[in-house]
Picture 1 (cartoon, rainbow, N blue to C red):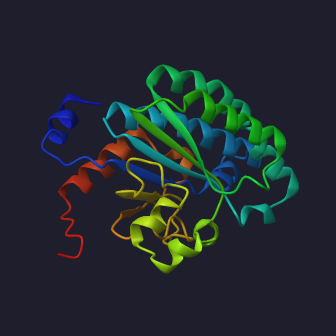
Picture 2: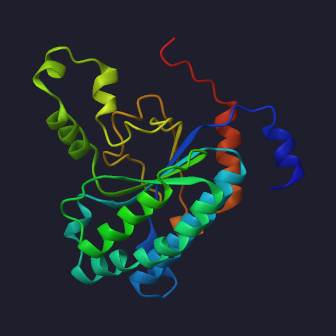
Length: 237
């Protein structure tokens, strides 16, 4: 990060939580005459680089939507290729341990292949005591699905006396210090949320970018955070 950016950000309100809808991996691969899996691989590497950048900026929480509940409809070879990228997570856990990053899975666990579930569960276990930074991987995640699962967790007594706080605590993000994203970034030129974190994003600031996710850069994050710091957030007041 340049000195000018550091100086500028000193006077800004930094977000606590950035979430990203990383759209465009397949289109990026096609435009580069590469197999689809290479687009997902480049997207995974971009995720690691952006996570480092966001930590360096002093932002505690990053959520990445890796795989939606609807993505199971894709070609079997593509799904297997995405799942095969779990080897990158195994390597990244060492960095998370060093940098005090806690990894949390958002989404369903019951449909996840055993090899991927083991890698993610091991990553959660090895980083469970980390408290400075938080990396949330939304896999087999859908906003409607999350809400339904949260409702099913509630007892009859909790339902009879339901409060927003009680409900939020039963969402996948319930244990996080900053469960609600201040910023959601969607790449790939699509201007929609696709049901991503509907409960948590009531007062989120959205940024829709034309570029594909593999091309999302550190300077893009700097610009987004700078613009966020200049926006007025009234929270209904």
